[in-house]
Image (cartoon, rainbow, N blue to C red; front, side, top):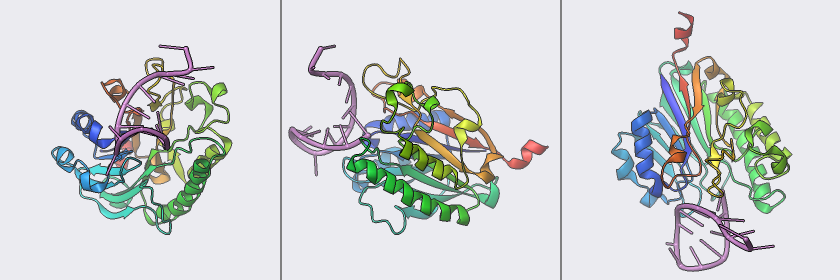
Length: 269
DNA sequence: ATGGTGGCCCTGCCA
């Protein structure tokens, strides 16, 4: 069994006690974090290493920042993507032992996709350009590694069923046609939305605004995703959103999403 | 209710 999770924590310093609690309760093999919001010099290494995880992190002051926590040691670590000088820390990739999966290794790519702020704005076009560059690079990664999981905060709700009020959201950020087309371009590389392999019901969200009691009213978006290569689909035993941490005191506005893989041969016994 | 929340090198900006 191999468990991979992703969680936009909106500040790793504020959330590290909750991250530890969640690790304790769920013991994933790999946890990808986004919006750590700390430069590497002050990443809360001591807090998190106490839980017995290897740490990788790439951050900057105040904004962005990604991290990978893992039970086994990482290799082939990549910070940012090749041939793209981006001052914003949004990409972190590593290779992990995964004896039961094709190739015996799992390539985990952790993305914090730009928010885009407003359709038509400068940050919006940065988001679209960023996604195009990511697609080009992921194509290469998928050719190199037999088992790939591309996880993180995509800041895109792929379909209307992933939005609490689709009529209100028409043309808005995270749901615009160009963003959804960019998301589909990633899927067309041979990636699968792990959550939708198991759950077809609408209004299953990973993010709820802090405002207006959005969480208790379930007014959210499904914008955090675990995309997996074709080779992993037959090994995937479950994928679910864990709403628990969103209900804790002083929560992140996002909640974790989890995917589990099992030995493929077990299904055929 | 012309507001709402929360995090950031502290205060206007970002999500």
